[in-house]
Image (cartoon, rainbow, N blue to C red):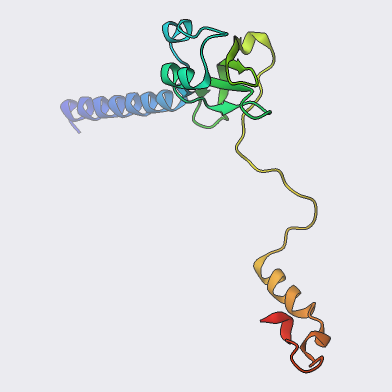
Length: 167
């Protein structure tokens, strides 16, 4: 192997090493994602407690991300900023909440802003709550239902009565 071939292979090896290290560094860098909607400060400043109603708030700010526990008692605008690393769960960097509260007549009674500094971060989840009991597979359900039949339901109980559970 002559000297030019050795330099060429060393250059290729160096380029491959730089490419691999660059890709591994890119895989470790964080990405930031923003979820939700927070109205602009100028739009929020246009809301007047005691004057505006849910209809005018909807015109100015748009529809909220969520409502209050009691029907139409408050609207919540929520914006969350998350940091994601490739192989880790997302981490909340910031969460902003604008709460617009209403009277029983639908008139704005107040505006409140909350953030991460105002309390602990509550992870918002769209999962369902598990009920008690046992999780059954499809075959367990099928054969369990077959074996749990009451033979008496198939017997004629008299003229004009249905058998087989009404099918």
